[in-house]
Each structure stands twice: as C-alpha cells, then as structure tokens.
Image 1 (cartoon, one colour):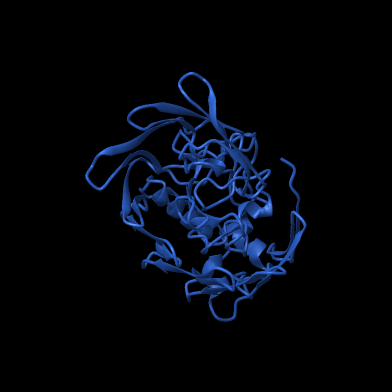
Image 2: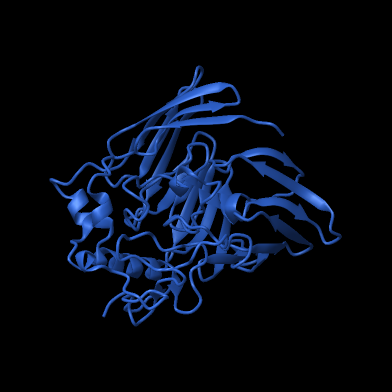
Length: 367
C-alpha cells in the first residue's frame, strides 16, 4: 500500500508539522515539550498534563474527551472516553499484572519483563506465548501464541515489527504494514491479535502501545508521560526513538537502542540487556570493542579494560537536580545538558534505576 508521511520538527525534536496522505496537520508544545494541540482542517484536539508531566486529557471537537489516570509512580491506571474504559494494575516490580477493558479482565504471568501467559478473572488460560528475547531486534522475540485450541506463529522484521502471522499449516492468516512510527497502514485477516508494532501490546480502543515503563501513542509519535530514567535520551522526555524509529528502537520505554543490528548492548552480568547500547558519555567514553558491564563490581571499566569515565567526568555534578531545580535551564534548552550527561555519579544512578526496573537489583554501579 502506498502512503505519504512528511514531518517537520522544532529544535527540541517535537513534531510540529505533518502531511498525512494529503492532510496537513500542525502541533504545538509548551516549554516542557508537552503537546498542547494537534489540529487539521476539520479536527482540533487539545491536550492537558498534570504537574508530573503525565497526559491527563485530550479533547477533540469531533470525538469528545479522553481522560487518563495515574498512580503515585506515574503509571497509567485508567483511560476512558465516551464509549470505553480501560483499567490497569501493577506490582512492585513494575510488571503490569492486569488489564480490564469494559469489564473484560486479562491477567498476566511474566518471565522477567515479558508476559508469557494471559488468564481471565477465573484463572482460565486465554493464551500462552513462546518468546526468544534475542531475535528480531531483541526486544520481545515473540515466536508463537497458543490460545487453547490452535497455535499461531509470528513473523517479524529486524525492529521486531510483527508483519505476518501464520497458522500451523504455514498459511498466512494475518498481515500488517506500518508507517515509521507504528501506525498500521494496511491490514488483512480477522485474527484477534494485539501484539504488532515492535512486539509490544496495543490497546486498540485508545491507540496506545504498552512498552513496559510507559505507554506510547503512535498517532502522535511520542510517549504520554516522561521517561522514568530522566534525560538518558536528551532533554526531551517524551520523544520516541530520538524521532528516528526507522533506525532505533526503545525496548522498554526507557532508552533507545539498536537491538541486534550491530550496536553494542549494556551488559547485565554476562547476558546483556538486548537492544540497549551504551550512550556516548564523552571524552572518557566506552571504547570499542566491548561494552560497559553492569554487575556487583560496578562500572569503572569498559569491555576493553579502559576507564569509562575521564577525570573531568569524575568531578561532574549530578545533572538531573541541576536541570529541574530552580535556576536550571528550561527542558527545551539543550545547552549545558551534554556536559551534565557525562556525569559519573549520574551514570551510576542510571545503571541502578535501569537494573532495578529490569529485575537486576543489587548494588549496581557502586563501589
């Protein structure tokens, strides 16, 4: 299927113009890179955020209002429009344990951060998934789904986009095509399947994709709340895959990576975290070949045996408080961010947060 997408961006990486199959769309943002509006010739949508930067509501002159609710960890716990209500629960490990859509409940059983079994409210198995996390981009590795009566097989591209689903005989029963940001441009088949773009689960009634740490909205090309890890991908805390999802992926809604397309991965012990390369932290940065290792011994050495941090980086202050406290530069201003990003102390804190989210725990990144 032939489609057209043209985008224009402001200096902070926010999409301010879009040509969508001949429809001209404009968007506006505030100083915190939060979307304020998205308008075309027939529809005007206004957005509101809470004090923590979470998308709170979107109101369309055509479709009415959609409201969002969050818990104290800024995790989405409800979304509602005029026709649908979805509610979510989580455990202490940040795993989403249930989804209730219009009173239909699905409960999840996990292997680390990947759901492998779905059950209804009575405990009956609805689906069981086979995954190989280090294939097809390394961010989910969805291989097959068994629904109690039949098994279907997923066929993915390098960025883990599900493009075809086949049955046990090998016949294609479902097919998808996407634009760069994950909007479905063509679909065939009637199979009920919510795992599509980058192997992540779609909430179809609301156009949201669950990435583990937060939700992504493909029609806008942004996350609906800020990055829990802070400024790992720059001062714009909502941008998806640095605005370049053709070449990057975001395994958990935390940090961009290259998957298994040649980019190095940060190591969690010996296994590594698929799809997350180390950032360029400046003059004393990670040498190649080799990747920074996250383990109980800390992160003082890179894979090649050299120091990860330069002497100047050792003396750098923590950036996050400096940037968000009174007197720091506005979030849309990248000036000063690059130096602060090189902070050794900040990098250690980041490794701790990342490992905690992925279930590593322990005294990571500390001596």
